[in-house]
Amino acid sequence: MDADNTSTDHTSTQNTGGENRSIATAGLVVVDKPGGITSHDVVARCRKAFKTRRIGHAGTLDPMATGVLVLGVERATKLLGLLSLTTKSYEATIRLGASSDTDDAEGVVSGRADITGLTPEQVTDAIGAFVGEIDQVPATVSAIKVDGQRAHALARQGTEFELNSRRVTVTRFDVVDHRIADGWFDLDVVVDCSSGTYIRSLARDLGSSLGVGGHLTALRRTAVGPFDLDQATPLEQIEQHGELTFDIDRAVAVAFPHRVIGPDESEAISQGRWLEPVGIKGVHAAIDENGRAIALLQEKGKRAGSVMVVRPATLR
Image (tube, rainbow, N blue to C red):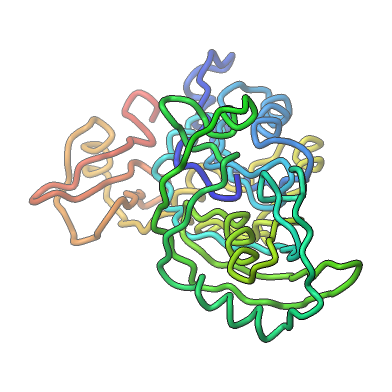
């Protein structure tokens, strides 16, 4: 969905090359997802390209959406739930003049309104209410669970339900262009926001605040955490070459702050022991003098313990 789920799609099955292969071929793939397919479709196609079932994605994008989708391959699937992907950036087109039952163009659009009196200045003023910390009700076709079932599944079944609002943060919501044609007022916007923000809900709520209805007609994610379109590779190219964007060592160095550790510390942490803390907050990496990622650590009190051992003693 346009708001990313914090859960990841991890699948672990047998690898013909054994665990050592899972280190040598492990890493992250930053995909430039095409429109018209699900995030799980992307995973399925990459499993064929990399000849492994052990691939998962960090968050999802709607079938309609394009752009940055981060995948983990082999042992790097274990990184996905630890990545700091709390900030997202999008380019989107919002159509003012009618609402949609899915808050986007793939749903049933109804309730056409007269937008002839609407001005760009009014739109800009209204957008101001959606910048900062806001309470947002997710789209009914989101992946949020209601009594154990996904909201989008319940919506397709015609089940009536309500979703609670959630506090999200929008740090940027700018109009870069607008067009008025055929009774529609279309806005091209850029949005920087926190994880959990639904861009389609911004479209819906902006249209509602202006009294004309609104829905999303295009969505492209340009960045998620430290990964952006400059690093992303089109899916077809990935299928042709089966190349990682970052091997596991580079992935860890890019995605996490890190400390360099010596041989004795590397041996200790690879065997599950703890290290002395050095004052780094949050999850961070321990990298040896050769640039190899040994573990992800988190400091608690007088210990820096591992939250994931990248290279256990058995794999080194």
